[in-house]
Length: 117
Image 1 (cartoon, rainbow, N blue to C red):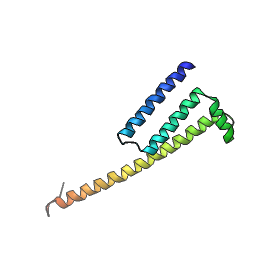
Image 2 (spheres, one colour):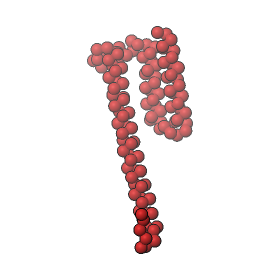
Image 3 (tube, rainbow, N blue to C red):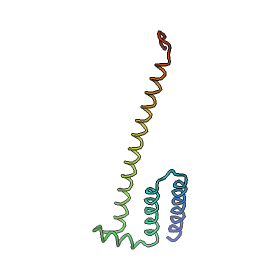
Image 4 (cartoon, rainbow, N blue to C red):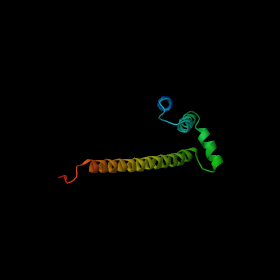
């Protein structure tokens, strides 16, 4: 079990280093940085002190700490999927707008009386 804890700790530090690096490159906002640091810190806390999850679960009226982790994970995953969906829709809208602009520009650049095949 201790090997698993160390492996998870190594992964958490790796994930945190990636987030900090993205923040330094201005690819992640300060709010996102804080969110990811809180998330990974919570993972680290639960790995090394599993009773912490049970204590929080009892406060929230959830039976077990494991249930709290599962519920929280599902909520976080749904939120991240929603964020990806919104980004995708925005990119699709931008691409459509660019394609329309390019098509109209090509149409106006053609000499009068010539048709394309």
